[in-house]
Length: 595
Image 1 (tube, rainbow, N blue to C red):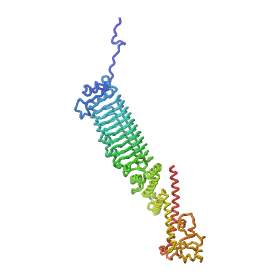
Image 2: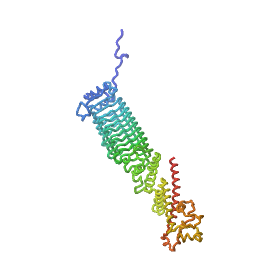
Image 3: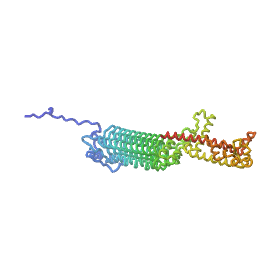
Image 4: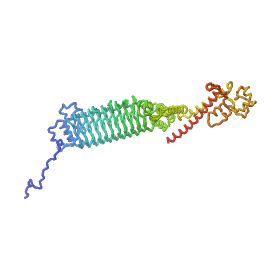
């Protein structure tokens, strides 16, 4: 006969006490539940949504809509044996959340969907981990959201009527999906309405379709796997930056278009954009767009902008620039801006593009009082791009405008040593160089218009030839043979007496003597190192000089005019020849630089 086992028998299992939990992690810690909490507890067990009210509660006076933040936290962390939470997570709609919802350093095993709820205290999710998505669409946060370094495996949704009266901060967060704030309203009296500095967002960032921020929006150093969509978003911050995403890396496009509006500065300092930056139809403040040192792999669109914007594009790199002439305001910064081409509605004619360059700051154009800050790079960049696009004539016009601007900015013959600024020699040298530079531009378009120099030589040649023709005939007879034997021979006396000194048409001159041809004579004098035989045989018949210098200086006979014209042609011929050499060598240097 078997004897019954005694209580102390080894074969009898000893009941274990229930595991101890921290306060707030057991259902028993909450005592009597509010009506809304009972509904939420029941729905969490079956994975259904708990709809407490229709829309966001106006206040906390209705006890049937109140859910304590501590009880909500208990369920978000998984409940306990008496209050299990389904894999669908906590889904709560239309409740008043009473107290601070503190999830700091917590692990939320399921998604967190709290829609159209009102929180009277802040949500704290610093260093928290949410295994699903964070859904706060339509909810009202009276004291903001602090979620620094949050890890959210899904997306974060603060959209469709979401409203926060204090800062929403997800700085350093890692978000596995989208950060969707479409239609959300963010406001803060302390300055930052939304901060996502250093966040890593694998999806898109949506700040559009009714999004409104009263305060600064900062995405400093943020990494975005898709687009940054701000189309139609309203960013209101009068003093400071309305939207700042310095040093961010955005793999997709950035859209600040379709009635995008910012009352403060929009800053993209050092930002890298893998696609387009589209500002078409956007409204910016007067000093509203800074893309300094930014890299835009594809297009920069500046179209349909009603009010011109002062744009700081210093050292920015752009794939394709597509802009309207009215987009840029006076005071823009273009120094260091590099772009590969102009496309779309962007003007490629020299007149519009030069006017665009003229919209730079006065100091960058060298038009301020100091005249020390002239920036040549924007001019050279535009000239290079126009050449590569095949608009060589416009590129030459830009080159001419650049040389004119150099002189206007006092860069020709500039005195670099301040200690010598008042010395007469540097001043004279500077004025001479400026005069020569002007002459080069007038005669040859600084080498960009060599045909202008050639045509000027032709004009001088024909004009002087016509003058020589007239002055060689009676009654002037200012040109005669240079060989003294001709005047001593009696055979040629008729040329002096009968023809009255008209040597050009004198038939007594032998055939072997070179006949005066005004065209050849003018050309022979004009062209250096060229001998047509005319200059040796013919010359002005200048009278004997007067005894007094002043009388001689102001004596102008026809022969004197011929001599002055000879000197002018000789000087002009040498100047034109040297300019031709300079033009050819300059073209060679430009060709080598292009290679």
